[in-house]
Amino acid sequence: MYDYLIVGSGLFGAVCAYELHRAGRSCLVIEKRPHIGGNIYTETIEGINVHKYGAHIFHTSDKETWEYINRFAEFNSYINSPIARYKNECYNLPFNMNTFTKLWADVLTPEQAKARIEKERGERYSEVPQNLEEQAINLVGQTIYEKLIKGYTEKQWGRPCNELPPFIIKRLPVRFTFDNNYFNDRYQGIPIGGYTQIIEKMLDGIEVRLNTDFFDDRAYFAAIAKKTIFTGAIDRYFNYCFGPLEYRSVRFETETLDTENFQGNAVVNYTASDVPFTRIIEHKHFEFGKQPKTVISREYSAEWRMGDEPYYPVNDEKNNALYARYAELAEKDRSVIFGGRLGRYMYLDMHVVIQKARELATEEING
Ligand code: FAD
Ligand code: UDP
Image (cartoon, rainbow, N blue to C red; front, side, top):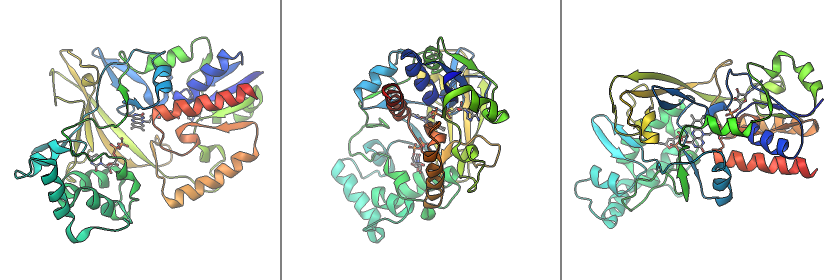
């Protein structure tokens, strides 16, 4: 009998397994996919590390978490600076002086940019924004909303901006400096050689069974360990007894091209509504690659249906209330702990996943 059954070999499961194993607990990790790593998995194509389940940039302001992840890989100095493409125009993101001066020929200084945005908000300023459209207009005014936000957001979420919660856009920085860094965090980078090595090192010496779905034999798995750490979908665990939680899914169309440099940047967002995909990732630029070929992925956002890969939880009121009912059920069963992005039904960046997994492991180890 194992001390812990860990369902899922993503970052959450792997950090838990690593910490518990180090503390002398026996662990079995099961993973339904044919590989470890969950959504941070990278695979090598033409010598390029391809982020198979979406582009992943590590960023944090927490020194301890940064030092922790650096134990498992060396990080490069990549700074995420996406480009927004609207029809035949390219703009820098996040919204900053480079964006404003390109958009408005008569804007050259921060003061002029602020005045222009003020004018663009005009009558449409909302004291307390009720939805994403109102929030966006408050932040950057009408033109940027229409060119760089509306189309992208509606493609990404499959809902009109005036029906989406304001907080989604709040995390996008707006700056009055010429600074294209997408994140405000102190530490940022990409692991040289990809993310999979990180998970491999964490799981070194731990028994892992791939192509193994917990639900194929849940009675057997429930009996095999004293406790289960479950990082799959919480609603599925409880047989959807209150109904399924909603997600947004993404379809990736990955292509190898016989060209050295396709778009000159790792991330280009397509913000117009008549382009069906949301963005194109050119993977080599994450590691400043010089390979003769290139690999790109077009991302198509889609409504999640049963059997699809769930990517983004839809944390609106309805789904959060539903999740709360599942969380209440989970509280009653002391033999299983839910964690990670599917277990907690929460969009979690990697650094937060590491912090939460370490906290859980510490609690378990100290009893
Ligand atoms: P997952 O990686 O989903 O791992 C869960 C694992 O459990 C999976 O391998 C799954 O196959 C397995 N599993 C599920 N059910 C079962 C079952 N029944 N039996 C066996 N195995 C099962 N974070 C950042 O910090 N920076 C970024 O740039 C960034 N970009 C992202 C882009 C996208 C498109 C997405 C979706 C997320 C992004 N994230 C980013 C978040 C990051 O992916 C997560 O923080 C991290 O992957 C969460 O790890 P996890 O272990 O909780 O979940
Ligand atoms: N967003 C946008 N235009 C862009 C990039 C982002 O309108 O070019 C909005 C969109 O609503 C998105 C939100 O900002 O959902 C957050 O963007 P971020 O890139 O942080 O989202 P991610 O894709 O990483 O979840």
